Structure formats: C-alpha cells, structure tokens
Image (cartoon, rainbow, N blue to C red; front, side, top):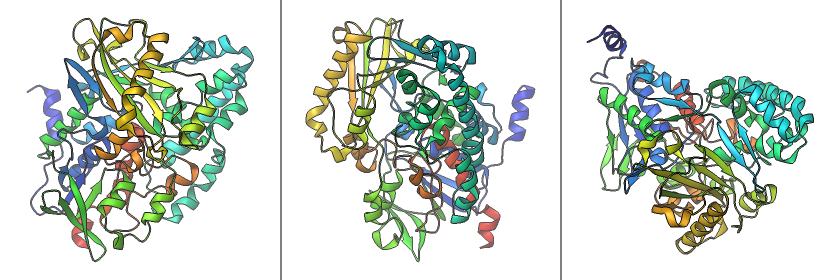
Length: 514
C-alpha cells in the first residue's frame, strides 16, 4: 500500500458501531447519497431505499443499443461540494472521478443561425458581447459584479444554512435587500444589457433549475458567478460515474443502496416519524427519516393528512411549480463534430414561449432545446464512430392537460425535424436508438408532483424560508433533501441541501441524550 493510500485509510472515519441511531434515506439521487455520506460519517446507521432498479434517481444512467445516456443532470459546477464528500470518507475525488472543464461552457444558437459561445474567460466573454453590441460591454461588467455579490450573499451566505425558523428569514433580509432579490432575474439583466440577444444569453440559466427568468428572483444571477469561479464540468463516463463513485464510498462504509424498495408510507406516531412502510407491506423502523423524493409528493402521498398541519393538500396544490421536461434520448450513426458538448438551440420566441409554459400551461408548436452531446468529450459513451445525444425541451407540467401517451411521438418528430433543419442535418436517417421521457414519466416513475421537473418554481416567495424546510414543519424526525427543498435545484443546490440537513440534525451524542 503506498503512502498516499495509507494516509487515506488513516483518515477514513470509523464505521458506525452497534447502538447507533438509524436514519432511513428515501431515494438515492445526489441529495440522498450526499445525505447518507454525511450521516454515516457523523455516526448514524444509514439505510438507503431506492424505488428504481439502480441508484441515482433523476441522475441515473441507462444504456441502450451500445449507447450510454445520462438520464438527468449533465452539468457539474462547484465541484468542491463533491470533493467534500470524498474528503469526509478519507478519499480524494480526483483519484476516482475524472472531471473535464468545458470550453465553451455552452453555445447559445439563436433562431436566425447566429450564436454566442458562453465561457468563464472574461476576455472571451467581453469579446462575444462586443460582437453583438460593443456598447453593452460596460453593462456586462456591472452585471457580473452583481452576480458575484449574489454568489457571496446567496450561495456562500445562505445555501448551506437551513431556514428553519422566522429568525433565519429575518436575519437574511438585509442580504436579500443588497441583492435586490425582489426583482426578476430578467429585469436585472435588462437593467445592464440592451441588446435583446444578450439579454437572452444572460437570463436563460434559471431554466436549468426549473425557473422562468421573467419570474424568478434575480438572486439567481449567482449562477453566472458560480460558473465563472469554478467552471462548468462534465464527468468522463457521464454523470452516472459520479453516482457510482458516491455509491462506492458508501459501500466502503457498509452502507448499500437497496433498489426496488419503493416507500409507500412514512409511519408517524405521536407526531414523530418512526420508520417507513414499503410496497411489500414491510415496515422498516428508523429514528429519523430523510426524504430525497419530491417534497410535495412526499407530503401528499407518504404522510397521512392528519399529520400535516402546514403542508396540507390545499397548500400543496396552491404552489407554483416548475415546468415539465420532455427529453428525447437518441444515438446516431456517424458524428456531428461541429456540435459542442452543451448547446442551447433556441426557437423564434423567448418571453412568449416561457409565458406559454409557465403561465398559460399551453404546449406550443415551437420550442427551445438544450442539446447534450457528451461524445464531444467522451467517445466511450457511444459505439465507435457514433454520437450520443439528448434533446431537452421545457414544456408545461401536467396541469396543461396534455395527453403525453398520445402526443409524445408527434412532439419527438417535431424536435427531430427542427434539429435536422438547423444543427443536425440528415438526422432522421441516422438515428439508430431512441427513447423519450415526458412529464407523465416524471409523475409515474419518479413520483414528481404534477410531473414538474424541479419541484416548486424558485420564486422569491418559494425560496429560502418559504420553500419546504430541510427539517419538516409537520413531523418530528422527518427531514428533506434534494431539488424541492432549500436551497433548490441544480447539482450544487441539491448537494448543499445535505449540508443544510446536518445543520438542523442533532448529533448522535445529542440524540442519545434525548
């Protein structure tokens, strides 16, 4: 054993001993796995129950006809949040996971064929801004200053702190005011930039976490600063390689993901979570329960109504939820070498399309797409000489009334035609494998309320203290992690939810003393 490995072994937290309290974690997405690692390293006995046949939740990976597809998140920012998990287990992430920084981060292609290459290089970004509108360069600089202020105040100052009481909200109000958090993100961008295309470039990011740029708080300008400071990365082997790495860390600690074990009820006695009931009828006792599932679904379907004074069915129904997602996964013969790893293929409308999706709940004929081509970075994700893709279209959630069982193939063909006419010529003749996921799949397979892709939309009054708390407002011993609790969606937000969990969880010693 080399010296580095020996040092790693010495730094590894001891395995949980007998008599440790038990935490049951529902779901094995990024939030559930991060919570499980933090719990295990803090002395809790952990059991992870996963509904699907493999770990990962929305971040799972699947293989089809020789092609490998990340089912969900593909963009890794703030990698130090992952590195922390390896460090807790006495390991180095870079010894197990190969992250590659993207250059550019994204290409934004407009409907007229022009494009903007978005990166973390200040000089390159200012040159791109100047290509469209030289007079907007000073405004771009001021916008990035505002973004950095939001990063410090919002991400670093609030992200890992659970908003557990009104006291936490009151303490945060000055920072919300400094960020002008009452403004929408698009309105803040429009304050600094005049060119309509630049306003799109600098305001689309909330769509990656389920928000309408014309409605979400401008605090989310922090995403620009996160990306600039820590980069945009992709994992060799796909995001699923990170999931596998987290599962391996847990396995070394004797914690295993129990797949095909759907939880159908959180048992509550005398106001406290006592364990979970499975679809098989089995009861698994626990001292605490941590749900990595959609918070609205968790409360509505896993906690009986008599135990919910705060998250009542009526309150859940009144929430404003993120858009749904239509995702077409496909593999092709040959390669499209001029298509970058991450590309936004925009349609003819921006504001009106978003109004159709978020406000009118109307499925439009036009659409904008996030096109993911991981084989631009990692050729192993497709057979030799082939490309792996997915095309993601934001769509209304299930309140639109769209019958996806009837409409999915029509919509897929429309996406195929649009891509064939723009960036993937000859596509329809080159597809060799295909699969689609709709909001109906999010509801039925992933148990997402209304089939929404990211839980509650990240509006100001659905963020921080107003978002479902990391420590349940209704049930003692019930906790939440993941995209639909604080601080919100996106891989950094989900990972930080596990840190926020630990800030409101009693230590094992304190738990024993209760």
